[in-house]
Length: 425
Image 1 (cartoon, rainbow, N blue to C red):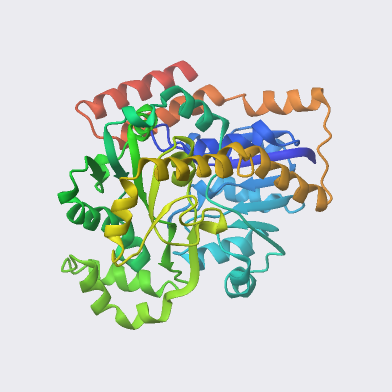
Image 2: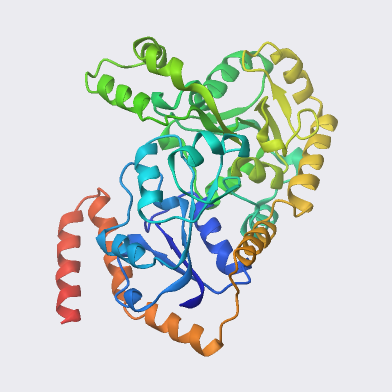
C-alpha cells in the first residue's frame, strides 16, 4: 500500500470555469501528503492496476449528474481497493440521490465531504448509507490563482464603467424555487433599476457566460455585482421531483416554472425546503477579491458573509429596492463593504485552499494515515502513472473534437485517429 493519495477527477479538455481545476490542484499544492491526480476523461492509466494507495479521493466532478464518468476499469479498481481509505467529495447532491447512496455503499466509501450542514446529515447520508465520517465544506475556496488574477486585472473603483454586473444561468425546474432566483434577481432588478441611470451588464443565458481572462476582466470593470446563495431548495432524496419533471418535459408542454409548480405540486410540497441546501459560492470570493460591492439576496452564506457588513441585502420580494439603490449610489459606503469583504474573506486567509487542506490533512492523520514516503518510491509511482499519459491526452483531445460541433469535425477526427493508431503500432 502506498503512503499517498490517489485523486480521481473528471475534467474535459475545454475552456470551463476555473473552480474545478483550482479545487483539484489544491491537493497537490497544499497537502502534506503526496498526491497523484488522474483524470477519467483521459481514460484509465494502464499501470494503475499495479498500484494500491492508502487513500483514494473521489472528486465532486465525478458525481454531478446521472451518469458518472467512471468506466468499468475504474469501478473494478475501486472494488479492489478494499483496504484503502476512500473519500468522496460531493456537490450538486440534490438529485439522483439513490444512485449516489448505492455508490457509497457498494464501493465502501469511508468519508464524505458534503455541502450539507451537520444538522442534516442524519436525514441524508446517515439514513441512506453506511458511511462513517462526514464533514461539511463549501464549494470552493480562495486560490493563489484568484489572488494573482485579482492583482493582474484590477481596476480602481472610480475607473470602472459598469455599475452593476451579473452572469447566471437558467436552471431546471426540478431544483425548486431557489434555483429560479439565479435568473429572477437579474430580470427583476433590471426592470426596477432602469430609471436610475445605472449602466447594467446582466446576462442569464448560456451564451452570455464568460470564462478565463474575459471573466476576470468583467469583474474588474464592475463596481457592483448581483448574487444569490449557491444551492437549491429541493433536495430530492427519493428522486420523485426529478421523475415528475422528466415525465412532464416529455410532453413538451412545460414552458414556465409556474406551470411545473402547478402540475408537480404533490411532490414539490413534499420536498421543497425540507433539507436546507444553500451555501456561499466561489463567486462571492471572486467578488470580494476584485472588490465588487455585492448586492445579494439576503441569506446565510454559510455564516461567512453578513448583511450590511460584507454585502447589500436585497429582500427576495424586492420590497427594499429603493433603500438598496440609494446605498448603491453611496460610494463611501460601498467601499466600506468591499474593504470589509476583502479583509475578512480574502486577506484573512481563513478561506484559502491552504487553510482547507490543513484541515483535510488533519482529518487523515486522525484516521491513522501518515504522509511519509521515500522520494524514490514517489518517483517510481509518478513514472508508472505517466507511462501512457501522452496517448491518453491525445485520446482526450480526440474525444473533445468528436463531441464539439464545428465544420470538418468528422474529417479531422478520423484522420487524427488513424495517425494515432499507425504511430502506436
